[in-house]
Image (cartoon, rainbow, N blue to C red; front, side, top):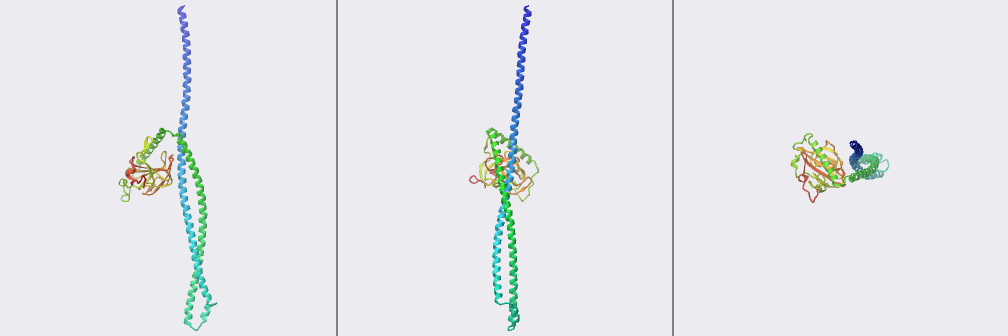
Length: 385
């Protein structure tokens, strides 16, 4: 009897514990499912954030390229307008000079007509009938014919000058119409440029808010530097740079004598602190839109937008040397173009998400950064020249 009671007690305990264990397993399963759902949701959020960041940078790239092209087109338009204004000014001066010539010719012709009139009507016939001094009459007749030819020549000259004047007036009208059209296009371009600039500022603000912490900034610097290093390595492995012997000095022989690509204030030196990273080139503060020039002969091997560096131009020189020009406003040379020392390759800007205008200038030797200060002309009062 006692044994049966014991078995019954054990059975009750087993059933009770089984229900508890089953309940716990069920609860844990539900918790696990809930965690999986949360993990999935978090993963989706992270993916969306990454996608959003990438889309923001893609949008920044699109806007900065568009902005650079718009500025370049506007600059070209400004030059055309200046040429038209100069042409109109020259045209006006030519018209004024031609008017003076015509007035002078008219006065000369008037004097001749008065002299002829003083001889009376039918003066030629009178001279021919004058038999008192045939020799004198002959000389006077020759002189008369000469005056007549001069008179006709002056009339012809006046007619030609009047035609030139009419042509100048037609040309001036065409140039005026063209100038008005260019000024209209310029106004539209300026409005578009202002809109693009506002769009860039909006994107820049969004990106700045997402990368406020130093760790995030450092992460972005590292990614950008790694991307640039990878790009340079790829470009370094391309075809060997052909140099014309006797025409251009080898890059290595130009050490200490290279001109700076732009005049400005040197605000960041090679090796200076950049968050927890270091500057592998120099930063030259200069006015936005100022021309950037190649430091020596070379071939453009890269001219595009690169994250962290904005609109970037890379020029390849001999013996594995390269020069880099970043944060540009506009690019004036394309991949494959050959440039000489002093050739304008770009203009100073603030692309790549920068808040102030300046030029990043770097030199690479077989992919490794070298100090531009040791290669370029001496700096005076902290300024490049």
